[in-house]
Length: 309
Image 1 (cartoon, rainbow, N blue to C red):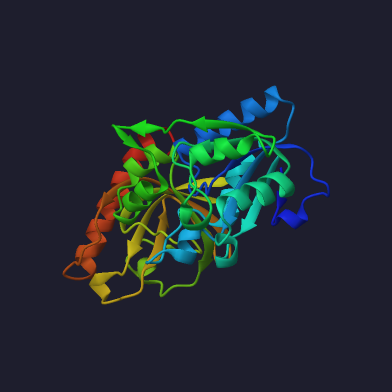
Image 2: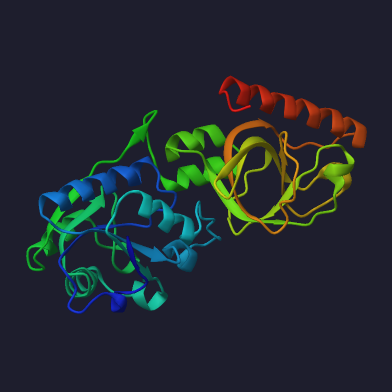
């Protein structure tokens, strides 16, 4: 998969493309349906299948509050590559870019810039200044700009549309399993293992402290897998402020089951499988040690049932 970080990075003149447009944060079930439709329609027309996305997310530029992304840009690109696309174009999003009206966006970006011959979008697609243009406008502009339009229906689960905003809310509240169901796969974060205060080791449960660029850190105690160099390790992860010890910064601490070795400095990926409980304050280290033992036992049972231990 080729990655282009601007329209100017494309070959000149650009080859005819089939494109799907969206932010695609999370690459959830709804996004997957759009990309599947893009690939099938592109193949039918013998066109390369290309996703067009934005960085930063428009809501990070205009949103009233800080938007937390489900994935880093690198994770999003890795996920798109795994879906068998031919290319991805990342359009740098700015206030100047956002001032374009919809007609200009279609003519300059989709027409001249991308040479789009097919445009695939979700049913709620909006574009142009103040998101003032919609599906009917895209259809109106398709003819003069020489491309076909395909609208992909929403994906619903339990009667509600699968949206990135809903998944963000679930993750922030620690509801991992419902979020995973909408993502179509387990939620993941990545980062490097850094030195901590070795408090877990003193309790008999050494932990890997993970410094991550991911913006959503679900709070609580979770059954997880830690992947290093392609090897998955069953684990239990705590994300929180460690109230028993009066800490305030949010930390990601993972205890690997039946593992001995040095992970310091290693890049790792953490996959969230199930929430065990909320973080809470204990009367002291011994009470915390006992609960960690119960958490580890619950995780062992989970992995044994799946023949992973």
